[in-house]
Length: 116
Image (cartoon, rainbow, N blue to C red; front, side):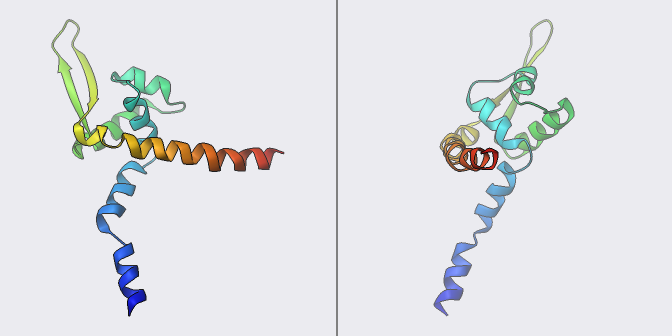
């Protein structure tokens, strides 16, 4: 019985949802770029190799719907649009940095070993 309880407690729907949100293709890279200061559409697209404008637009809309990103219209001529992380989005900083450290340590080693 205790194994069943541990398994049930190990699966958390909130955790699964969080993994699905930030684990979508390109979402992690977009968040990392924004956490490092990119706010304009072109800035984000330029720092994430192979990210298409269509995919960036789609992911930004999804992150906005989740309350992680906000779209800010700045009434200048021409109108300027920025994407900013909300408090909820900024709270992902530790998570994103921890994943980056893990990737550097474990995935970098696998690549070097496979190449060697």
